[in-house]
Length: 252
Ligand code: NDP
Image (cartoon, rainbow, N blue to C red; front, side, top):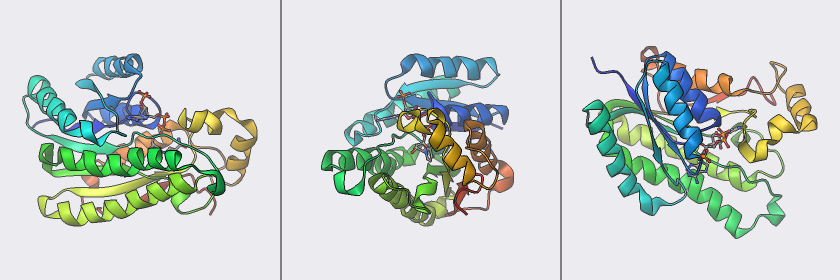
């Protein structure tokens, strides 16, 4: 039987990279994308290959839907060339950025950037890749704990993620006949470069979040990559249209 192949957007750093590492431990091959950090992406590819799975990287700007048809063609070529396959199995819509601004000061440009990257990007990239995603495959859309609880400064970002959660349910319904399961994974605050690395680097914020988290600390990338790999395991094939929050119990 063919090994499974996952396409992870934003796999050069942070949660996408960690997800790739965890999937590799489950013998899943990986196509990862990066935006500008080609060297980081190649380092992840080399690490994955050294661990025994196949891996490739592709450039993608998730904020520019006009490039998605061309990107899908590139994915098709990579699948043919390196896997002799026409399809991949798991799509993980992970690439993203954080912008923090009070509601009253959020600009239209900030709103549009967040919308293009998180909502329009997820919507139209998934659409562009539909024919390359195998029947019986899976989609995981990354959301955020910020759709359940409200922290000042995240109104635009969280609104996009909320829309991604609605989109997840529609995809689950419309792709269900093809046997494709679609779920949302919503991390709590995790120590990555996200939002300028504030959760990791700002001691005050880090301690505050830890104090509001049932398991008593801020999340680490390993807390998320492992959860996504588990979500995508064969044992978990009957779950679809769900929002899973992986936050260590933030703001219960
Ligand atoms: P990081 O900043 O660590 O990594 C972001 C990744 O996305 C990088 O691979 C980056 O590529 C890629 N990326 C950024 N902008 C674009 C773009 N315009 N087009 C394509 N790729 C892009 O972030 P995280 O790993 O922390 O975040 C991953 C996801 O998790 C995001 O969707 C985020 O919203 C979500 N999330 C994160 C939380 C956290 O606390 N960290 C909490 C809840 C949700 P490159 O390296 O080339 O720049």
